[in-house]
Length: 285
Image (cartoon, rainbow, N blue to C red; front, side, top):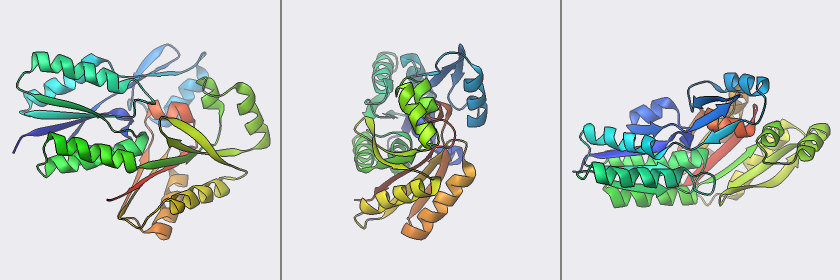
């Protein structure tokens, strides 16, 4: 059996215990706030939001450098791996996939004994996370490079993600929506519900209360199910109590085979702002 390494970028949003349990190596993305470069995961969301509010200018997220991925491939080789599969979030949202491809090319020149493969999972946040987790579990079970890549692409392709924002101010800060849209949503006290797919986000509802937004997300999940074994991830940005309530509603309504609650890392949270709640899910084939 080939000794296999699974590498992922930090946008997976998996709990640290699951990352460690499944031997996943994480390459951190980066964030620039007030001129300071912060590695993803280095500070909790609450501290991130404090810094963003105190800083002038827009916060900016950035992919890891090709050299960061090379370092991960090098570490896998030094640990005795004969092959390494690197899984990234959708290229529709980030340049991470391209950076990983360049890192893999550098690794092939430097580490000829290590087989490398880079896979775009097509997912974001916990959709990406579920693809990485399924790949890592397959690697532990002895799967080869091609099977691991196929599993990651399959889970990422079947995964769906929806979320609701407490505020649009952070999307405005990041230049992703015009300020007038954020102002209008604030004045009208509207909570948008968004679906994330095909490298973009689209609005599926505008709700007046958090309770209605949660119910709209649950209804969206219910409408997308076909009866297969269900995996669900509940995500949040500095909203742990609300996430636990949403997770309990998911548990009671759907009885998923797997339910994971996780907090957004800095690179994800800076785009949503505090109070974000999201659901990612997929069904087994």
